[in-house]
Structure formats: C-alpha cells, structure tokens
Length: 295
Length: 297
Image 1: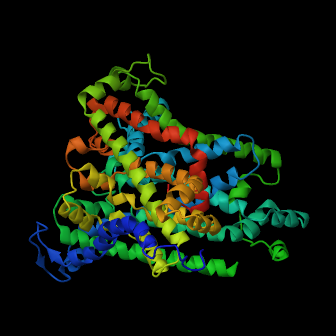
Image 2 (image 1 turned 90 degrees about the horizontal axis):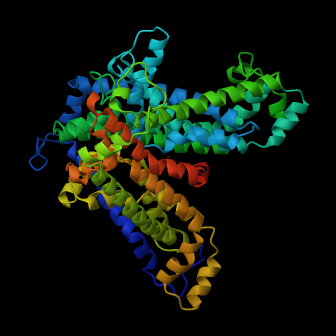
Image 3 (image 1 turned 90 degrees about the vertical axis):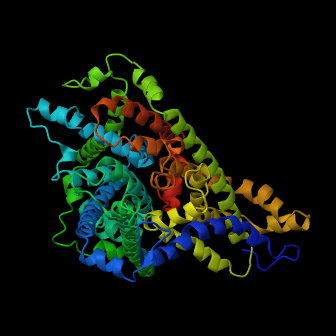
C-alpha cells in the first residue's frame, strides 16, 4: 500500500476509477435494498398507484397467508436436508479425494463437473431421468419388476428429489473447499500421532475434525445462505409443485410480485428473508472470528 | 498443541462412521473401498449428463419406447435440426453469447478499475467504499428483485439486452478477488512509472492490468459461468421472446409435454457445450478461484 499520496498523483484519480462500479452498485443494489423496505409498506396492484398501509403487509403475511407459512415450512425442510446432507457428503468426498490415489485428479474433477452446469440444465437432465413413463430410473425399476413411481409428481417424493438434485449439483463445490482445508492441516500432526499409536479413527476425531472446524463452518454457512435463496433449479424442476409441496420462499416472493402483482406483500416477504440472511452472514463473521481467535 | 491432540483420549461414542466403514485397520481393503466409492460417485456425477446426451440422438420412436435402449440406433441429428427450425433457439443462443461476452468484458474492466483504486491509492473514504462494495455481497438479487425490477423499469431497461448486461456487471466478488491480487504488485513499479510521466490511466492499463492477468483470467471464467447460467435476472428483466437467453428459452418448456422432449434434450446438450469446454480446458483456474477465495460456483 502506498505510504502517502504521491505529489504527481491527481487527487481525484481513485474516485474516477471507482465510479463505474459504485454507480452500478448504488443504482442496482444499495438503492433497491433500501427501497424494498419502503415498498413493503404500500399496497396496490400497480406500482405507480400504491397506498401507504404501514405494517399491514407484514400482518397479512403472518396472520392470514397460509401459503407464506407453507413456503417458510418448505424452505426450512429444504434448508435442513440440504445443509446436513451437504456437510456429511462433501466431507466424505473430500476425505476420499484427499487420499493418495491413482487418478486422483480425474476423480476430483468428476465431482466438480455438475457445479459448472446451469440450474436450468440440471433440472432438465433430472426431469428426463425421473420422467414417469419413459424415464431411465423407472425403466430400471421396471426391469426389476418394481412399480413405477411418479417421482416429481408425487408429494411424498418431490421434496426429497429436489434436495438430492440440489446436492448433486453443488457437493463438488463444497468438497473443493474442504479439500483445501484438509491440505492445510500440518501432516506432522498425523505423523506424530501415528508414532504414538493413534488409530485412523482417533486421528479423524482428534485431529482432522477439530482442525477442519473453521472450514466446515464456512461450508455450513455458505450452504445455508445458498439454500435459503434457492430458486432457479426448483423453478424448472417442479415449479413449486406438485401442489405447493416444493414451493420455497423465493418462489413465493417471485409469484406474488410478478404473477399476482402484489408488490407490497412480496416486498415484505423479501424483507423478512433479507433479515434471515443478514443474521446468517453476521453469524458467519462472528463465528469465523471466534474460531480464528481460538486456533 | 500436537501432543495435546495425540494424547487426548478418543470419545467413547465416536463410532467414526466414515473410517469404520472404510475398514481402517486393513489398508488394502480400505483402498479398495475408496476406489469403489469414488467410481460409484463418478458414475452418479457423469451418468445423468451422458444419458441425456445419448437420448438427444434418439428418434422420438426410440425415446418413447420401453425398455429404453442404451445407445441410439443411429446417430441422427434430426432432433437438433428440427429443434432449431421449430424454436427460435438460434436467437436465444445469440442473445446468450452476446450478453455473456459483453457483460464479462464490462465486469473485467470496471471491477479491475475499482480494484486498482482500492489497492494502489490512499485516499479519503477508501476503507468505507471498500466496505460498501463488500456489503453488497449480503444483498443477493433474490431478496431485492421487486425494487430492482422497478428501477430497471424506470430506466427503460426492461426488455433490452443492456438491462441484462449492465446491472450484474459490478460484482463484489470480482472487486475483492482482483484487489487482493493487486495488493501483491509492488508499489515501486507504479511510483517509477509516475516519475517517468505516465498518466494514471496508463499506469492502470499498461502496468497493473497486465500484471494482474492470472486473477483476471480466474474472474473471466467465473463471470462467463455466472452470466451464461443465470436465470433469475433475465427472467425479471425480459418477457419478450426475442430477448430470451438460452436459459429462459429452456426453462419455458416446463410443462412435461411428451411431444417436445426430443427438442428439449437436443437444446439441453447444446447449452451444455460451453460449460463442458470450460470444464475440460480451464478447470484449474476455477479450482484455484474457489480454493483460494471461496468464490461461489
């Protein structure tokens, strides 16, 4: 970093360099973030003729909107399933991929491939596999003499598949973060404990897991934040259905805003979601600092 | 610290599910199980995509036949040619390529300018501005889509490719990534250039930018991926089909209409191509980006 302003350096130069980015942030992120709360206090089917209603949108959401609570409940189920399975699976995959193996580079990239695919493409790929009449999965089941299952059209299965497919498309990303974490554990710890006769299981619980905690925490919070915002994949995979069995909160907001034109109500739900995300990010910063202090 | 870890007794309940299943006491068995799980994992990751690719070459008669054949009877491209005739996929494709390219160039230029200012100048409000930029990480599009839509509408950017390109170009992750990298460029280079009479713009364009190439390459690949794969933003900004990107075009076939699957499969495969090329040729940059900064995939 430069110690002080160089005499030849124009005073305004850095501001000019920052300007394009700041204008876009200001107009398309910061202003909308504040404007959102303001909008949530109004009601009307057209954005240009809305009436001030105070906190009535929030009241309506909490006391009258069954669908809002349905979306909240679905989101919590989705988030819980997604985060728990993501942590367990990405840790398992990262530990497998961290072993000295032949073809390790190949295996590592295999798990990473779906991460690059768009949510739309991921949804369409799985829709074809889970298709009721001609899908590959049901064809395999039929070969074994089992009953076909309408996977995505059945409320018992739709959420499970939604979570599973979301994990399929993101587990490689989290494994990568965990592999980086595993590699930063000094190998001296393993060597010393092996000399002292520690079994691999003891090494896992007493070295790997504690040393990996900061990275695991990053994975938990990142996957939490992303799960709360899930939209694209489900929009194409089930569109919230069948019924409302996979309707999540962001889609609830999207529908209310752009299909039912209830901008105020949607803005109120957005604000509540933003609060949840802010708390999670705050928790990430706080816990991250505490873990860093502790180690 | 190391001795602490070694001598602490393992918890009684610690049935290390993962290691136990590996048969940790028997290295050879455990290696075998590792390979087996990795091969199964690889199959789960690749097979669905491969199946869709194979299906896309099958005739409708083959597609809607039970049990399905593994390989298409012949490599016909009918699904591809017919899909291109029946749906404006070439228009979607052109829009996607245009939006991705222009938006990525814009991202690289304005993010690197901002990163240059934040890493190589000392000025009033620098830290505050950096914090403001980082704070936008906390405000994802999904929680501000209504006001953003209204802003875009007010600026007459709805249903225009500019509306798709400009707003997402200023990425906080990009500024952060480039700033961290530029901090490692020695200040002496810049000072001596200044004494030699180089303008500030020239210092940025001819000294800092070329030196920051590795970080710019990483951001370029991420930006291509973000823009090419994006759905929510184009969905909010456009509703005219001549402005659809590939992702919206594909997503509009939500109905499980059997008569269209052969086209959906063909178009899905086409839209997979760029990402698969990145996967094959540029993967190491992505891996580096994620492992070093936790950049979102």
